[in-house]
Image (cartoon, rainbow, N blue to C red; front, side, top):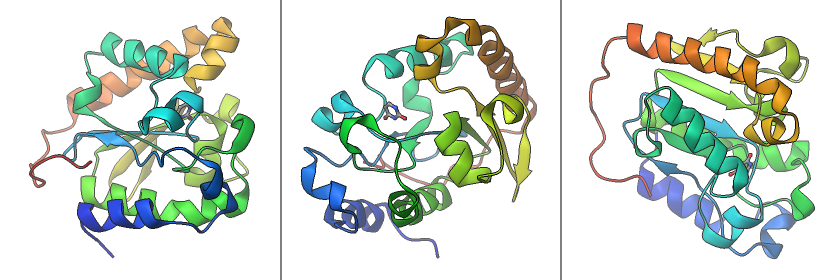
Length: 196
Ligand code: URA
């Protein structure tokens, strides 16, 4: 069911389905252009994101900004979100229960934005969007068309910071994304005003 931004934002703000919601500073619903052609999905907030209530504002976020700039996109043009909206303690990956509790919010955001392409950052986004049987090392760089949306998995920027040897592959993935967006027709505008 397609909801409204006001509803999904209120639902996220009031959510206490998971125990981790009790230990956070801020929910991190995600931010950006409600009419984005490209949606970006990471894993979950880290310490900086929890402090500021914004997705991808720490070191990985800075690299993400550079990666987007390299293919001619600004953060303001895209919508950046995560599988979970609360920071799992110690930056652990979300549990299946946490991810499943939170996924309806991401689905609602996706339905409102109607992106033409989705970039999945890392193994957690891959697992919960395309399936637990997939491995990021194999699935990266290959578009999966789903309900008219082109979904592209790539490495998480935090993985690129840990292992710069992966940057070459990530750059190939980003060039594919740039080309796909350049071939797709411009999107019809629907949403007015900011999402968050
Ligand atoms: N890593 C993520 O997956 N998401 C963020 O918002 C920040 C770091």
